Length: 410
Ligand code: N2P
Image (cartoon, rainbow, N blue to C red; front, side, top):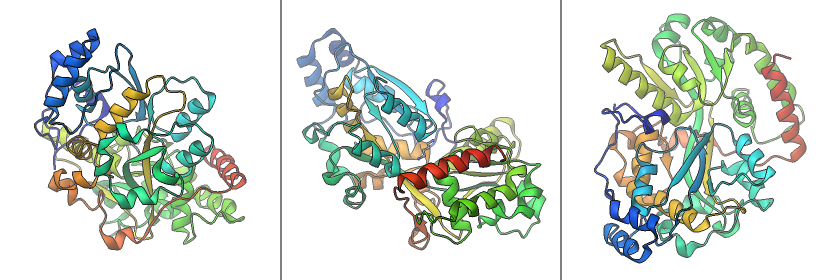
């Protein structure tokens, strides 16, 4: 297993990064310089030649304008941004978040200045599309759309008729990250590792408190997990669900160390947490960081595993969109098109351990990642995954309020 990259490695390349392959679109310094200086025709000619007419680049000329991209943390490969800059001459300002709510607050306030963003499809992109926060895509500028998986595209048409506003980026599941040795030391060698019981059974949580439990700060995921563990439909929005979920978390709240959506990866990797609720690829990343640290120090590598519990899990899809007030839509389209180039997105999947939505990229993904059932779950596991729906606003509000109270131990 090759160690993986964290966002920090964008600035500090690591020799052990997995999934490295020769960049099919090597730096075209003269193109970049030409575009910045405004020699667009020459630049475009060079660019098309370099890209073989397919398209990690496009004729979009960002001129001197920067492209402002706002993405989840640890969600591109080490060279994704530099590869785009070098292929197109468009300078990227890259900024990250770890909660959909942060993105939504900025979009709703307006004037955030982002050109490309990556919301989760449901309920976020769904209600953002409905609120008119995204501009319709110009599909003529997105020739790489043809590579996307029609099944995933179809699956989005209920929230985005005609796939007009968003394109799918990555999908994954929310399950458990386990430091096997620490968990077995606390709960016994024979403890089943494949159940939400590890977290929600208070007897387990109590024994794991010392080695560290973290839970996502994400009401949709937190409610989903608890309701699935309780054997209930996470999409029902039943009137008594708030009470049931509050009870479930109330019983384990004293044993949860932190609620967060990003720092838990390091905690799992460096032994500060032994059980985390987390996003699939993030846990793969933590495992790889731990392996890399072990290689560097000569210490034994911890056995860190991602588990999709047998009771089921939430499956989410993150999409790419252009805010309605984007100042650089041509460059935004060029960037989205670049991300849909099979070689580019396959590299990202290798790096972040999330499955992409690009059919043409399937054969390009590192075989080790393609065979990883935590990334591409087999059919019997997929059957137990639940896609979240957008719940009525009042249910959503109640969940948000209850979640705040749960976290603060009230
Ligand atoms: C990336 C997490 C993305 C998954 N670090 C959340 N939808």
